[in-house]
Length: 231
Image 1: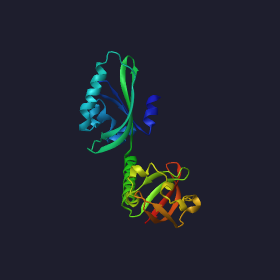
Image 2 (image 1 turned 135 degrees about the vertical axis):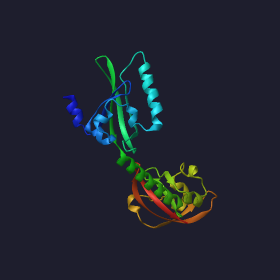
Image 3 (image 1 turned 60 degrees about the vertical axis):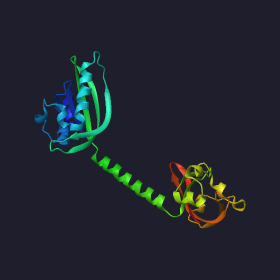
């Protein structure tokens, strides 16, 4: 009954012994590795391990064999497997040991994470593009906490505009930049997209008319005001 369950599993399952010899692979593993079960029966597991990982795998297996007192272990990790056609596929895997009739065996469960890796790369590309746009924007961009009015993020243009370093600005509040007559910045969700002109102070004490537009948004679970400042 257990074999039928493993045969029906959607994830690849491989059982191998302490010598690294493959004893069983289910149909999902056949599909993932590109081998028929009879091709891998009795074959060393490192046949499906990329060359650069084989030495570490063999050392880990040897270390396990030499232990005087063996204990059950379980490991989860991400890596790659080598298909029959020579192509590498990224996988998420878990490996556990079990003892049957006095012998120790490894059970490996793996799933293809090619689409997940692609999504992560795509997300990274998007973030990189947004970061590039953010830093290269000529206007100052300020992310301000609605509640505390603390700066959460500022771009390079903002630091040049006010004469402070980024580290200095992140330790300040937006009200620190307002002249006495404009001390209340009035940042709220209702101020979104409005154009406001305030007198702001630079680090050197000079005052300039700051045109501020922006919008309210949620950033890292905080209500923030994204202000775009023109000198």
